[in-house]
Image (tube, rainbow, N blue to C red; front, top):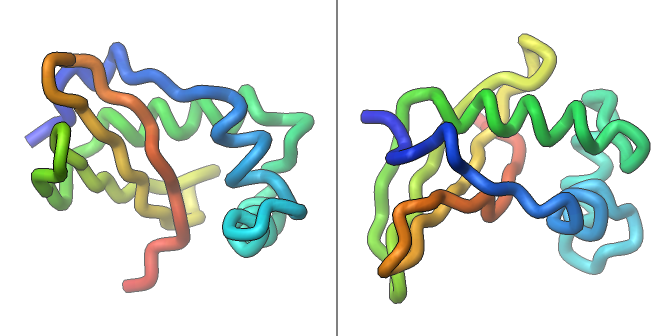
Length: 107
């Protein structure tokens, strides 16, 4: 199954620059180190965003209900070789997915 309306998925640039690519974020700093090794930094956030959007079109590996909506996990490759998991959510009353997070895929 594909993420419903994946072509309309939203990604807030701040989610990337202030969390996933932030070396000073108390939780996101370890993810920032991983993504930096893969070649992603704040200066190329648009490239990162475009690759995440492309991953949204992959098959869903896990669908899980949550309070207020549904989360979808999708595995994909960055730069053709860096395997990650992405999480997208669709809130109740909406049909537009939004990006939640990404992290290294182990396995």
